[in-house]
Length: 230
Image (cartoon, rainbow, N blue to C red):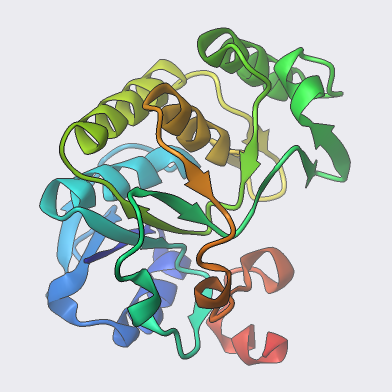
């Protein structure tokens, strides 16, 4: 299994160097804007956007059939990795659903798909993605993912995910709160799975995912504050 990360910018580097201590260095692959010591690092010169995580995920899948992707702003507690054994191929997530709260607005599958939110960037993103997938868009929690794919399923997913990210390079939501492009990025990963006929499961690994606490939305990228949510 490859443990996969995106680390871009000094705050994320600090987080990565903290969270990576939980894993064997030989199992880690990180995409970054700079070399991160002895870790297997893929350096990107692209300006930051949230969809850069696709590089980490797809490059990890090229190396192994099983990938655990984790956002750096996460606390690892005491996960039971035996729960990852003997499960079917697929993409496993904490949550998949039809409604999210984005910048204090409730956004549904239908209103993003048909361009009925209050935000033009979200509307343009959603309408174009709906045209491609031809079904209402689903939202996922992409802060942690376990992906198990092999053979043709893996090839198709990598191909479709890369093509979607490239197609939407200039059409992704902009999140003013942290001044970054590529927000609501889980929709592209969901669409890649749909186009590849790969199931997304939010039930099988519920107990496993409970051992990973994603603190970013609550306290920001500050590892000194991480104990406050335990």
